[in-house]
Image 1 (cartoon, rainbow, N blue to C red):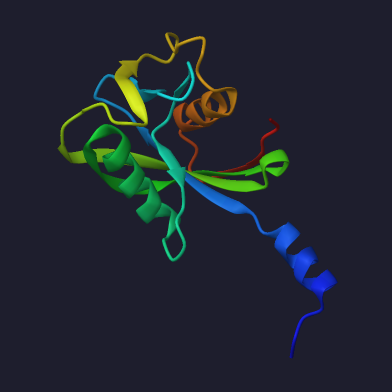
Image 2 (image 1 turned 180 degrees about the vertical axis):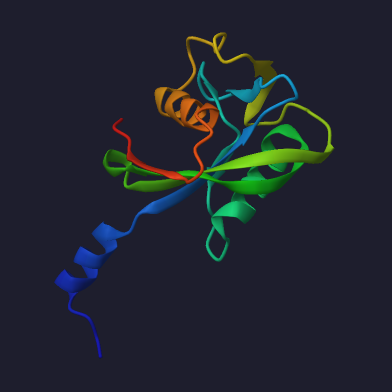
Length: 147
C-alpha cells in the first residue's frame, strides 16, 4: 500500500537522529573530554549512530575514531531527548581496554579533568551528562535536554 505524500512527510518529520557518547573515568575519577576542531568547546567523545548500528556500538566506534582508545561499554548511564535538535542521545559508562590517546580531525586536544575543574567551554548538555555519571545511580536516568 502506498503512503500519501502528506503521510510520508509527516512520518519523515517525526524521525529522530540518535547519538551515543562515552563517559570514561580514570582511577582518580577524572573524566576524559575532547576539544572539538569545529568550535572552541569540550565534549564527551561520541557522535551519531549510523544506520544499522546499535547505540553502544556507535559509542565504541566514535571513541576510537575521535580519540584513539578502544573501550568496553560497561553500562547505560542515561537516555536524553533533545527535542529542538530532534535527537535521542545515549550516554554509556566505558572503560579503556586498548589503544592510545591521539588527536583526530574531530578532536584537537584530549585531557582528563576533575569534577570541579571542567573547562568553562564544556558543552552544557555534556556537563549535565557528566554530572549524571558522577551521581552513580543504579539505573539509567531519562531526561529531556534543552538547547
